[in-house]
Image (cartoon, rainbow, N blue to C red; front, side, top):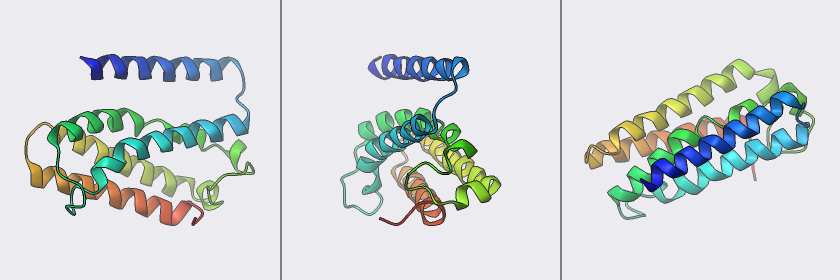
Length: 152
């Protein structure tokens, strides 16, 4: 019940934000902050899962189910903030995002599909399958970050 309420609240917040963007042109700095916030939330909920496949973190089915539900929503959020208007705004985004937008969008769709797969399998109890799905998400993140994010 709490997850449904949180997902509803999160959806409402996102829709409210998007509706506001329709009525007023968002400044590039705002778009960058919004996409960064989305990525940070993805990190928050993927972080506890990322060590499970290797055994660095204990497997906890309840955490997987909860975090997979959050990630399913969050995985769709940051992408509309990568607009041409933001290409000159300071961020850790490499210029290649804007010159290779089709490839970038393909990678974002792949990421979303790996998260969707985890969300579907998370309630199955198939620990090996779940760990494999978590590993695929990690690979998808790394692939995109290696291509389109400034190295820290």
